[in-house]
Length: 107
Length: 352
Image 1 (cartoon, rainbow over the protein chains, first blue to last red):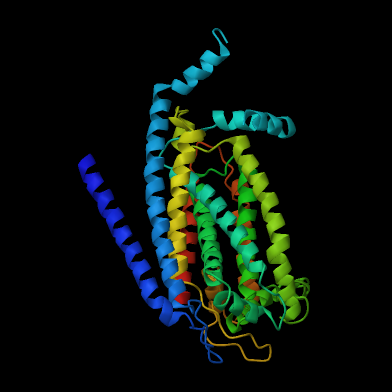
Image 2: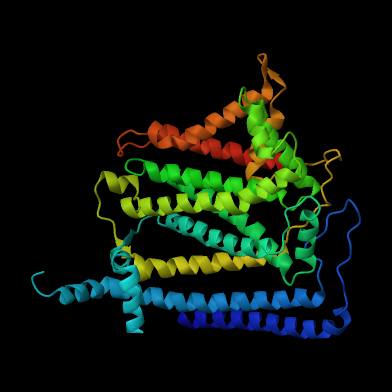
């Protein structure tokens, strides 16, 4: 089971890493061509899409998003370990025992 | 480090709070997931405050500049479109979380004695959240927001005696104008945040005062439910939920950023397909369905009175369903399900 989880985690990191790398490459390729792109003015009566922005910024945001999810995955793994540890300590009653020993016998 | 801690402790005296948090326990049962909805509201509120302040740095609440300043925010400011998108989606998520939280409380009957005041403050928080949504909708000052605000602020007019006065107070005059925009902006960034934070403080205090509710069966049979410490066991679980919600919010904000309509024209006729935000859709559809006259009465007045009665019933649920805690209020549960089905059905109908 642990081996399977490790494989899934490695695959997820690989996919996210590939996404990040692809985003960086694409941003680099598009940077010179899109550097002077200005947002197009919307025709009267038309809705302005909020996503009117240079391709470079768009790609940068996608890259940041990939990093955000990668960070979330790492933090979730870290939190999972902390939760297991905290639950284990709680089950064993270590915290309560420590409190009792601090108060001293008979209190 | 310890001297800094001692300095802070001398000034603020936070030791009782820390001791309280260290001893606080969270019951574990089938409804434990509902506890996360309350903290999710806090997360989205925090995001709203941060992104709202950022937007307010560039937004100008005047007739000439409101729409243009939003255009500047989404096209010229670095990542301005993303900040606006996160603000907009976070509002949606927050109101959804408030609804889920409130429905969870309603279905588990957690509003009963001694938590009546907690329920009242919660419903007031929902009202504040909806008012945030209503006032914020006008701020981009585009055709759709102007038309929807005209419809929304026209509703109280149907009430006898005070109706016209209420509409004038909302609009800062007879019609929706630049003064309405200024008034809504002040409400959105000043009055409502102060009210919300005050009620939220009371709500959180009451939750701590009465503790977290447990299922009816456990309460009736006086079962000793297993519990985990709030710190760190429950806090870390909450942090995990917050992280996932944050990721989902950011992803949706990036891929589904809201657009902006053409600048509102006070003289132009109302555009076709006026629709309020999703949380007002069921009221909007209800109003559309009511005929002009019902038994000789103004149809709009009847609709407004029915909606007000519904809101009053929601607010006063703890006093309507005040039977002994052991008995399940099946009628209230059935009414809550019926109300939910009605709201969802009407909203979908309105979207079709």
